[in-house]
Each structure stands twice: as C-alpha cells, then as structure tokens.
Amino acid sequence: MASPFSGALQLTDLDDFIGPSQDCIKPVKVDRRPGSGVAKIHIEDDGSYFQVSPDGGTQRLEKAKISLDDCLACSGCVTSAETVLITQQSHEELRKVLDANKTAAPGQQRLVVVSVSPQSRASLAARFQLSPTDTARKLTAFFKKIGVHYVFDTAFSRNFSLLESQREFVQRFREQTNSTQALPVLTSACPGWICYAEKTHGNFLIPYLSTARSPQQVMGSLVKDFFAQQQHLTPDRIYHVTVMPCYDKKLEASRPDFFNQEHQTRDVDCVVTTGEVFKLLEEEGVSLSELEPAPLDSLCSSMSAQEPSSHRGGGSGGYLEHVFQHAARELFGIHVDEVTYRPLRNKDFQEVTLEKEGRVLLHFAAAYGFRNIQNLVQKLKRGRCPYHYVEVMACPAGCLNGGGQLKAPDMPSKELLQQVEMLYGMVRTEVPENVPGVQELLVKLLAQGEEPSCTGQQWTLAGEEHPAHSTCAGDGVPVPPGTGCWTPWLLGPENLCFWASSRWEAGSVDQAGSPIPQLGPPDWVGERTDCAEPARPVTTELQI
Image 1: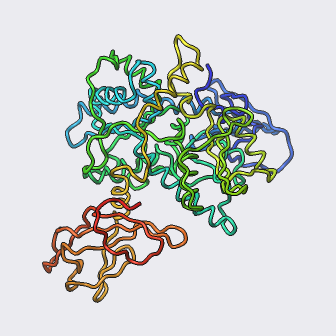
Image 2: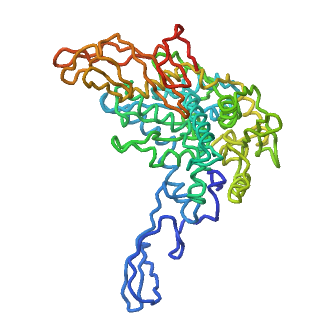
C-alpha cells in the first residue's frame, strides 16, 4: 500500500527491519569488547537476537528503538513508525475519548475540542456537493452530535502565524547584514518539508527556517493555554483534535517542542485527516448533507459565533502573498493590491518580485513538491539563491492536494483538485490585522502572567513605571481600580512599538484591604514608530 505521507518523507526504500550493519539516526549503543574478531548473530525461536563471539560467548542484542521524533529521512524504520503513529492518532482514538466521557464521573470528563482546517473543509465540500460554509456548519453539528464540546476554525489561528511571519521577515530583512538568521526566510508551516530539512540537511538549512508556528500548533497553544484558562481547566483536562489535509501533521503534533512537561500533555492530542473524518461519518451512518447546520464556536467570549473564513494567496495559507504585501508596505512604503505570480519551469515553482525604477527590491518564490524543494536546496548550497522569502510545501499543488485529502471515486484527480481549489476560494477572505478578536487576544495573551510589582512610589507592568496612587501593603498592588494604563505588548525592530490601552478592573483585596485589580480588556490598540507613550486617542478603532 502506498504511504500516505508526503513525498519529501519517502526518500529511500523502506524496510521494517534495521539490519545490524545499517547506520541509523538513533543507533543503539553497543559495548564493544577489545579485539578484531568477527562476530556472528544467532536468532532464537522467539525472535531474540544474540551476538556470538569466536570464543562461544553470547550477548543479547537490544532492539533498535526509533521514536516518532527521530523517524523520517532515513531508511529502515518509517513503515513501523507510521503504523504506530496512525494507531495513536486516528479517529478511533477520538472515539475512545468520547466513549470514556459518556461513562466518566462529571469531574473526570475531558473537554473535547476539534479544530478544522480550511483545506479539509474544502475537500469535504467537494465530496458532499455543499458550499464551504454549509460544510463547516454541518461538520460542527456532526461533531457536537457525537460528543465534541467546541469546534473551531484554524483559519483564526492562521492569522497569528501570518502576523508573526510578517514581523519576522521584516526584522530579518533589516538585520540581514549582522544576523545569524539568514535570508531567504523559508516557511515552516509544512511539517513534511521541515522534517526533510532537519533530518537531511540539518544545520545548513535550519538558520533559514522561519520560527513562526504553523496554524495547527498556534491553535494548539491557544486551546491548551488561553482557552483552558477561560474554561478554568488545566491543559491536560482538554482533549484537542485537529482535522488536517495531511498525514505529516500527525508527526508535527508529536514533536517534543509542543509538549507541556508540567501537565504532561501535547498542544494537539490527536490529528485526524480529512479521509478519517469521512470514515467516521460512514461508521456513524451519517451523511453530512442531511444534518442541520450549527455555528462554529469562538475562542474569545467577546466574539460572536464565527463564520468560516480564509486568506488570500492560495490553498496553503497565503504566506508568500501576505508577507510580500506587508514587507512592501513596511520596508519601502509601497502598497501592493494585487500580487502577480510568474511561473517558472512548472506551475509549482513561481516567483514574485517588487521593482522600483528597474531595481528589484523584493524577490519571493513559492516552491511546492519535492522536485522543486531539491532544486531550491541546490541553489542555496551553490550560493545562487536570489530569493528573500520562499513559501515551501512538500506536496505538489500544496495543502489542498495533501495525502490526507479525499480521493476522487469517479473523476480524475486533477479535476477534483480544481473543484477543491474553487470551493476553497469561495469562502470570504480576511486580512489578519483586521480580524475581530485577534488584536484583543494578542493583548490578553501577552498580559497573562504579567504581575504588577510595587517598588516605592511606583507600580510597574511590562517594564513601564507609573506613579503609585496608594500605598504598598503586603502583596497588594498600588493601583486603584479604574486607573488607566498603557502596556507595550510587542517591541519590534527599529523602535517600533505596539501599545494597548487598558483599565484596571476591581478584583480581590489583600490582607490590608488594598485592592488587587485585574487588567481589563483593551479599549484601544495602536502602533507607533517610537516608544514614547502615545497620546490617548479619541476613537476606539484599531489603529494598525
């Protein structure tokens, strides 16, 4: 059976058995005895391996153990790891958690959250001949019918990935002469590409990789951190499932980078593919078309129920387009309304340039598929890569053509892909900076864990000192409820500051009766080109 993982992860012939002579990225340490004698290996009836030395002595050999964090881009063990991985992260695991919730005591139940990707939504819409909006609502209804508590859209978390990608590129472009993080910036949202880069090219490619998290892992962080606090739960009490177009996303969720040691839980507990959701529908005997629609949930209590959304720039997230437009505006003061792509040797390798008076200011590219990835890497190794930024995806045609998407039972694959692309583009698009709740959530996330401290006649939050209006008492905070405050929540390159204006709300009191206020929601968020405290604006509209 063909592997569902992306081509970038299938580099050589695969074999479940790792022979003793094969090198592995995670080799078993064998204590070697002095001497140059040739040893034989004896296999017992139970499958155990013993090394037999010339003098007749035997030594039991350990099994080579390769974890999911170590697999990929080597020969020998991927097929075994795939089997374990697909067993651990599948719709069957989701079913087990939902079944356990039905019999568990109220205090022992886990809150089940499902986050659906726009690519999976488009694939299901094509199969059931529905609009993307109807598909999102009916899928929400289905998940809640089987016991899921909340259903989110990962297009919301993609806003944060895009914003961070924009910020990171501008910073690295400005600091390219003296930075250890080199240009071009290579996107990091595709786990198949990242695994290939790390395992095959290691230290050479890592400096080029973007540090921005993928939408899946941003959503994992939001659900297990911010949302868990909103629900007054510890992260391990939430079971977070994502629906993705790609099997490689299972490997991304399994990385140690996204494991919470304190609570012993992952940001994303289980990844199910679009095809596995379709299997779940079949096993439940449910047709998506026949379900009554239900609205998507919102991460922020201040936001109304979400409608499905997406972003411009193609079915892989639009990283190139958003970063290009932002960089043109921020670095050169040029507003680009439409991005013009120029195909090169094939449709999966395209270029975008920003020119002024015959001079190339920005040179971006999109490289999809393993063939184009190899060409890109060769250009980098030869020092002939002209790009400042490259959107890299392991699958030809990008995420809409991921290995976890539904296959066409009665039409050519190319025709199905065109239909999925059309449906994907039917959803309303949004600009990350203008999405309701994104700026508010950024402020709240950065305010979490910030405890105002009292020193003499001043109180401090996020490095800003303000005159104290009451005395320090015990662990109390010398700020009476109602006092306004300015909080810089992100310090960018070249003294670029982002400010949020908030007010202290009444909270608890300390032993001396002094108020311990809580930071309320921001009444204004704005941007300045210097770090001086801005004048209080009259409007409450976002200024970014």
